[in-house]
Structure formats: structure tokens, C-alpha cells
Image (cartoon, rainbow, N blue to C red; front, side, top):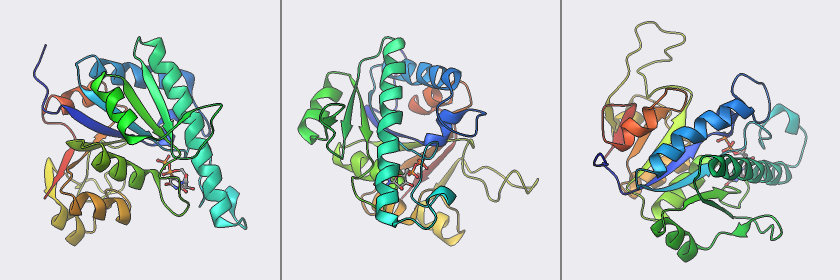
Amino acid sequence: MAETAYKRILLKLSGEALMGEDSYGINRSTIVRMTQEIAEVSKMGIELAIVIGGGNIFRGIAPGAQGMDRATADYMGMLATVMNALALQDALKGHGVVARVQSALNIDQVVEPYIRPKALRYLEEKKVVIFAAGTGNPFFTTDTAAALRGVEIGAQIVMKATKVDGIYSADPNKDATAVRYNDISFDDCISRRLEVMDATAFALCRDQKMPIKVLSINKPGALQRAVLGQDEGTLVHI
Ligand code: UDP
């Protein structure tokens, strides 16, 4: 088996990644394909934790939440991540991978609560741990939950899987001269105004010296290459 560059990683998946070409919800073939990639990484012996977003179902700042009390809307967004987490767990099971969902909000009949020592034990047992309900607090995002849980579990890196295959000097959809960075420092991201994660998540990773890798979830094999330490996506480092 190939030597992996990391022993424990925190993977952040946006809810939108589960939509595929649809405009809402969970696209079945997309989640099956995506979890196949995740299953391959898990089977490499990596200790893998996942924070899943909820943007494919509901966001506290979505147009559908306009006029709502923001905290209420954010709780709805956190509940959306629980649905995604269950779908992810189920799809991973289909690939022969055991996953446990832990939620930052207590929904006892459905998921177990977030208990750090238990999460650590699952990871040591090579079970995938899916962290649901973000940080459990309104006014935050699942990017911040990814940074927080990543630091808490002692992950060596936060991998942010998005629709784009890294960080570019400009929007590659709008600017043909945009170039992808192989690696870039936290300070350069700030001075070049490159948005990698929201400000809270970015600051937490920077303070805790937690590297971030941005990669595409739609590119076959990208996650596996990143885990092997090969040139893939963009690495943000101190
Ligand atoms: N959310 C929250 N606190 C958290 C994490 C998430 O209130 O700690 C809510 C917030 O409304 C957010 C929604 O859950 O818009 C879905 O999360 P996010 O937008 O981060 O999902 P993604 O963009 O990754 O799909």
C-alpha cells in the first residue's frame, strides 16, 4: 500500500457538492460517486473525519430565509447538515465503510452527540467520523466547524473539497489569465484577498498552524492524490 502523507485528516465537504447538477437536495449518483472516492481514502488506513455542510438544503443567509430571525434560520441550516450526514453515512456503508455521525445539536433518536473522546476512539478504530450540525451555534458556518473539529481531533490538515480544483489568482470562470497556486501562505492569501474559507475559520487555522488544502471533489482521484501528498489542489501553509 502506498505511503500516505497524513495519518489523520479532516475533510470539509460543502452541502452543494451533494447536489451534482441538481439545484437542490441530494443527487443519488453524485453521493455514490463521491463516497466511493472517500471510501478509497478510508481504506488506505487514513483516520478520516468529515464535516458536511448544508447549503444544498438550507442556509441561514439564503434568499429563502429572508425576513426570518437569523438564529432560527441558522438552526434550520444546522439541521440540514444532519440530513446530509445521515445520507453520507448510508452511502459510505454501501461502499463497505463504517461511519459514525456525531452531532453538535442533540437529536438523540437520530444521531449520537458530539463527544470528543468517543470521536477519537472511532478514528483510532479506522471508522469514519461525520460531524453534523456545524459548531452547534448560529452565526457560524461549517467551514468554522471544520477548522474547530480539525484542531480538536489533532488532524494534520483540513482538506476543503469544493467545485474548484484549488485557489486561483482570480476567478478562473471570469479571467482566462487566472493561475492556480500549488501552495500559498496564509499571509499571502490575506494580502491578495483570496477567499479560502470564511474569516473565522481561516483565522482559527492560521492561529493553530493548521494547513488547509483546497481541492476538487469532482475530479476523479484528487482526494487520494492529495492524501498521498502528490501535487493536487492548493496547499495553504504558515
Ligand atoms: N450553520 C450554523 N452554525 C454552524 C454551522 C452552520 O448556524 O456552526 C448554519 C448556517 O445557517 C449555514 C448552514 O448551517 O448557512 C449550512 O452550513 P454552510 O453554509 O456552512 O454549508 P455549506 O456552504 O458548506 O454547504
